Image 1: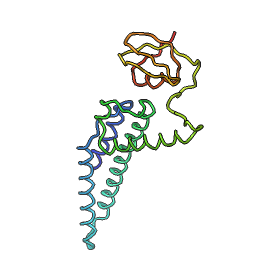
Image 2 (image 1 turned 30 degrees about the vertical axis):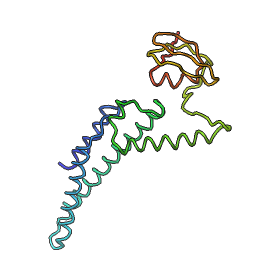
Image 3 (image 1 turned 120 degrees about the vertical axis):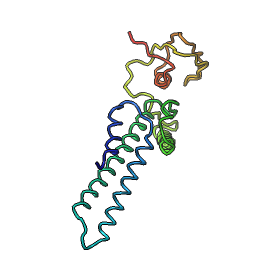
Length: 191
């Protein structure tokens, strides 16, 4: 049946809505091979003008279009997940996620980082504005956090240096902590 491999790619994305699955090179290659075979069959049928099977050509062309849409949807959804991860994790992708990305996706992520960094430097005053810090409006300026792993010395925006040790609790400004919370180094303690 035509289009089953393309549909398999879409089902793979639906099975893991919150996680980026490994790039499925094999199935994509199979879909492209199927599309080439369908195209060649259509070309051969149309070259025989006398008894061309136009119904078969239409069915194969519809299958070509369906496979194309499935491939584009697969790639589009992966790029959207990677874009979302940039806002969640910052400019560094965790290794377990980067392992699931293909080389063009890594290049796209790096280019997106550069474009976003250039934009953030260009807005605000002369210092720029980091759009990734406050994803939710802050309710207080200082938050209580617990360090989940030994991080070492961390320099705050005002120049103060704090040594972050595993298990210790700190009352720190919200801004510098947001990135460390998203990276899993600090945990926001709520009452």
